[in-house]
Image (cartoon, rainbow, N blue to C red):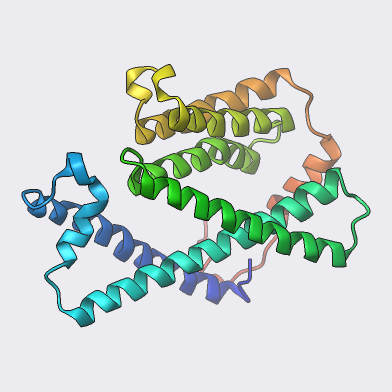
Length: 250
């Protein structure tokens, strides 16, 4: 969205792809090498979260300090971006559009600041619960959060891009099912079948179910406004002039 021109998009594609390869590749190799320390970690007693500290404990103090700084900076940047996005979305896209339609800019800013504090407090409470719990590990929490996000948003986003008959009700059903299923997995997994009593499996099932739920529900619920849909998809029909090197001939 902030790209200035086509050239910046091309550069961004290359840079982001290389960055993703480094990050994803580094994570997979780190997970594989973590098995070399299995004889030094009691997984049953200490959990998976103790593997990385065990791997780092024999490094020099400078490298350990660097790792701690990197972890803290990554955590703070993620937390700040998430709480700002969450508070602004809740205020502008939900509350202003439904319950507080006459809210001015000053009140919006105040409410966003209050919600930032609320979301940070919720994050702190979750962190304390995770620290005190002997069952819920960080990796499991990540599986639950990403499973809920993917299960709720993948299907509505994908179908809305290419299928004009996607309905509002179908999107809401996908939202509720994906996030609700992961909440059940987190709070009362014993109610689910054995194969779903794992955040990774449950998240995958939520994603696949969403791909079925959206088209099925869309067939039986009120269709979106035809004029709005045509105006939205009109961007696909615009003529664009490009250089011959970009557009291959017949």
